[in-house]
Amino acid sequence: DQQVKQNSPSLSVQEGRISILNCDYTNSMFDYFLWYKKYPAEGPTFLISISSIKDKNEDGRFTVFLNKSAKHLSLHIVPSQPGDSAVYFCAAKNDYKLSFGAGTTVTVRA
Amino acid sequence: DGGITQSPKYLFRKEGQNVTLSCEQNLNHDAMYWYRQDPGQGLRLIYYSQIVNDFQKGDIAEGYSVSREKKESFPLTVTSAQKNPTAFYLCASSMRASNQPQHFGDGTRLSIL
Image 1 (cartoon, rainbow over the protein chains, first blue to last red):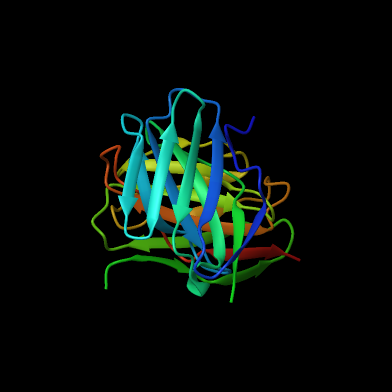
Image 2: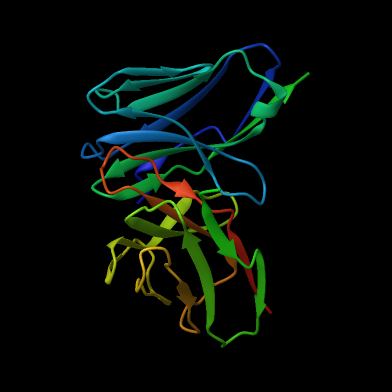
């Protein structure tokens, strides 16, 4: 049973505009949420995280929002740059285990 | 440079053979993890270890085995009992505190001929 879902497999955005990636989860025991970025044939790279006791965390161009009542989080990238083209994974932590979504492929158009 | 090294990057084995994937880290992390990624899917946890000489099964441990004899090393053996071993395997490590992110190696792509 998939506990973390990314319902949009792909997203295309123009350079300079905002990218919004969404993630839903079902397990209320998750206490920490992360976003990873992955290029082909490489391992995921940690981007940003948020604790379940917060509703927003910002780091440069990246902001993560958490809505616990809706069991939903989102990643905003603004402005989007060509180097942001990659697969983005949402992950949720319970104890020491991470559960991952299936990923969203972001393409930034010039 | 500190990091996680997985070797080899590509691995081919005949059906029925056991194969061991290497993972070494010099980040002084206590916890290490093995994941499997299949096309169009997220990462699924195979095994994890929070401390030397101790490890736990993840969500898809059947057909796999691990050891953790040293803090720096967490090798994964894909046995002949694993029914569909062709996949991209990723190793990760982290500090033990629950708010610390996992850091990943660049993966090993295993193909069974």
